[in-house]
Image (cartoon, rainbow, N blue to C red; front, side, top):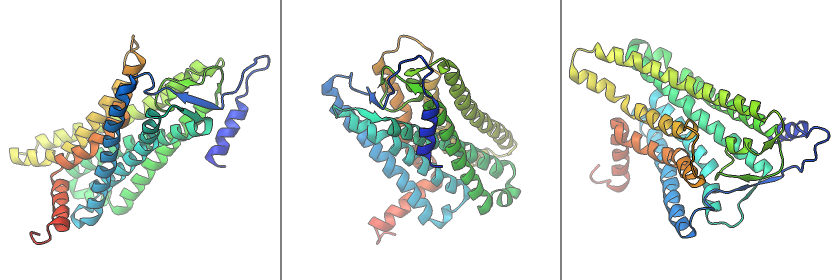
Amino acid sequence: MTFSSMLKNSRTNAAPMPGQNYSMVTEFILVGFSNFPQHLLPTFFLLYLLMYLFTLLGNLLIMTTVWSERSLHTPMYLFLCALSTSEILFTVAVTPRMLVDMLSTRRTITWAACASQMFFSFTFGFTHSFLLMIMGYDRYVAICHPLRYNVLMSNRSCARLVSWTWAGGSVMGMMVTLIVFHLTFCGSNVIHHFLCHVFSLLKLACGNENSSVTLGVILVCVSALMGCLFLIVLSYVFIVAAILRIPSAEGRHKTFSTCVSHLTVVIVHYSFASIIYLKPKGPHSMDSNTLMATTYTVFTPFLSPIIFSLRNKELKNAIKKSFQRKFSPLSS
């Protein structure tokens, strides 16, 4: 059974209760940036377009550098390539639609397209979180169990771990999408967001089970994300304990430097996610909520390749060598 047919079946099963005269919603309107002053929209468009292009080019540069440099054919950089892939796909699932709607007068999105966007954004978003967790485990094994590293992190083990992260992300995306689009949408079809955001959609659902579904979605998402964060923190507790046992300051610095880029991305990822999903309810305007949402959907993927390129010495040197070979053949 395909993803589209599963959604159609769930929608059929979610028919209104007898006696209720609901008109089924077949498309939604994305408010997005439409309430912003019109003269600011070209500026926002150019800014987010440049960030989008830089995100794509930065992650593609990391991937091509890792695959072209044999010295980087290690588990840590295999996971980094998978992370770059998930960031590219997440950005492609969200940002182009936002950019088009920013300069368009027609901001409608069909029911199926909205469900597809939610599925892909959740799939790649959760895959990103699972990969960060696996990268934390990789650093834990490398520092705390260096003699067993080649056994625990063999090529087959790494491929299996990456496959499980993608499978887990797909399951989470499918689960959340089916839960949300099992509901009946009636009345208003205006989504106060620039994408098919889960909580904005839940506000449009009708029926008695809306509150229980909202609670279920929150529990599923928070449990998965907090579980990943807990395992990352636990990995770094053991890593710090192992580093403190190194006698020389130079050895401690050299060992910890292999974790800095990953730790920085984790902090940025979960900090911006907390701002969006755990912010207290208050008198926030729709415009401020829209701008805050872009910090996670646009700004975080934009920062990630910068952090890995600047804070990872091996990768930075490999990128320099790659550019020297291509643009300065005589000097290389």
